[in-house]
Length: 521
Image (cartoon, rainbow, N blue to C red; front, side, top):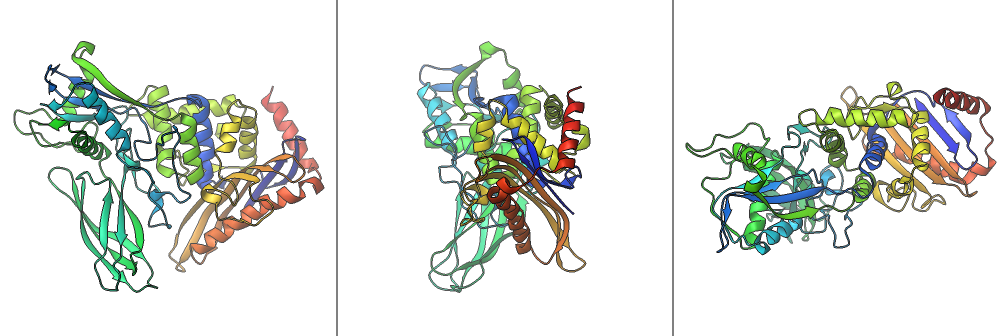
């Protein structure tokens, strides 16, 4: 089934409407709803705060008799994405999708923010720590997986909760490939079984085993083939315990800053991780230590240093440009915990705030379905709902920021390689979305949903709104998913070129006017 709506925003008239009120599996076009709502509720200039406190006594000689506590504030970009100009770096094919598609690691140093905080700890007089290094990630639990990439959703997010594992081939077939980890903080040890293949070999990398060590770190085996000639292939290891990963990362940053840490016991699993590890007899667990530090009187807990994220508009741009699933999945939790003041139910509170926002925008949340922030199975929207939502955002003060955050046809983000030579290239700002599963009956793929929605600056100077979806298409392979996506892009390109020749669709316009009258009663 296909559904399309194209609406001329300049003349406020419908150009095309086919199955516009029917629901379609929306996939990642759901991120339009998630991120637009968050942009409205947080505001363009909102910043996440990551703070480091100390408990106990800081002596004149630089010795801290107490704990260092890094309090996570939900910043999704504790990573090398943060640039000196207060913007976020991204590549068109995000590292989080390595293994599904060819991807590149984030350019910057993954421990950059932690090193900045560690330097601040030293500059504020702490040279030695006789106590624990603790990450307090209590604003919501780190116990849910993002369903598409199976990455853990958490309030602390070092390097997008993944470790970049780069395999570098040798000069000749048969040689063992070299493996590099980033960041390498002791959380993961890799058993390398990757070989150098022929120059024309099909590259492949996969983790074939993964076991947890007693201290919570992991040992994983990686196998595969990398074509000869010092070629590089990226895989990503999905961190199981982001809080422990961040704790190890912060410890590594402290070592880099020459802050000596003498903990009374080995690193334990930190706050809000499950299951918690038992601490040695007589020692408090890291979770209880974090709770004690968090609940300590202000006089007993002193702020040492703080990192403020780039403005929230940068996070929206990153998430929409590269379709960053983990960031979108985390957004309802951030809304629910930071604005809705919830913890265990943060995700539901965030969606409740979104529901209220959509109702306030004159839309009917009862007519659609949303499972999560990124658009998992169960999320469904109609072309009409999506176009009316985009129309509402276009009238808001943050509308231009939202528009500029979308991938551009043939130019950047997930649309970089689509129709680069089309006259419409550079004139379509839109979000892609797809959801496909294996079709075991015939060895192919069932495309549950493919969508494209956004704005078109048409050749006639008008701005158009559009949403196009296709559902339930049996395909032979995943390559054909891209073909369907190109077809949806061609619909947008056609609207760009021929909008001036279109006549308004009378029935659809009448229905839209009637709906508008009903909404304003």
